[in-house]
Length: 93
Image (cartoon, rainbow, N blue to C red; front, top):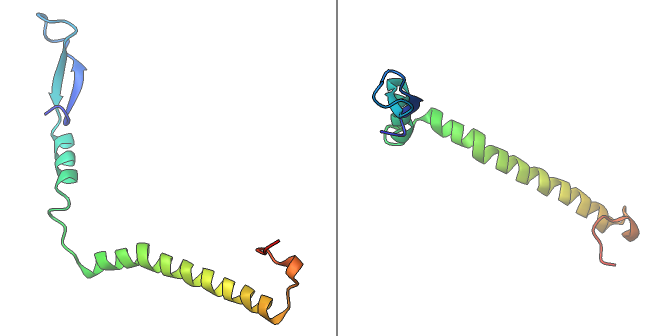
């Protein structure tokens, strides 16, 4: 397999000097096989679900809540007249 072999010059072959030979590395082969079949051996557990929630859902929900709360505060200031129209960040000219 070319993907798991390392190319090197074969100095031990006097009949063809400078020809590239293949060195088979079992560690590289195991690593590539593990990467290729990792999904086949995945077992969903509460821990992996927690990683999914913690790394994907919770940051998105937290950022959405932060945006909504800051915009609601700003909108409240606009509607109660605490900010003049000329001082607003987003306005129609």
